[in-house]
Image 1 (cartoon, rainbow, N blue to C red):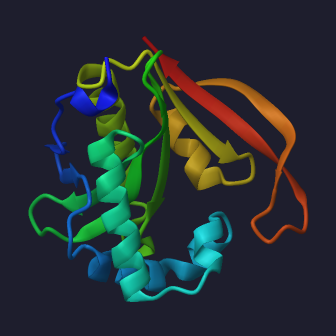
Image 2: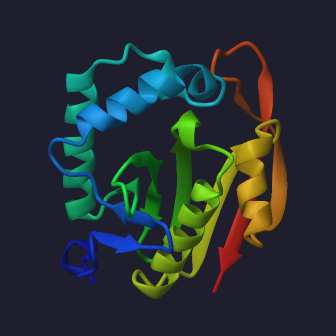
Length: 186
């Protein structure tokens, strides 16, 4: 089946969170979150090394919405259910609809880290992938040195399938890094 013909929700909830596809106008809150969290994000994420401007973030999110609708990449934004405060960004990336399988990526606004929000979001996104998208495999890749990112799949019972040695460079390009591959299969 052509993935663009697949019907599935563009939002869902967990106990504390609303997780949804980006909408026009989301750029402001995401931009503000990136600016506030830039020091933490720079250590691990290449996009945090680029100039951040609100209109660039807005354009990126509108493109992400189009990609969601085309089923090419499923970016998801995370909001607190009661306050509607932006918590972070995640998604189901690099879809292979033939299997089907997806890779979860994530980052959190540092004002919300340490409260279990991202673990809750990743658990909800994993369930969404298995239940709504009929995924057979959900993957999380992270730098072996990124202990906070690594703790999430470990807490959620993902299997560490292996560590790819000298798999990537640090975001500043100064050192080689190893990558953990975690997965859940169904």
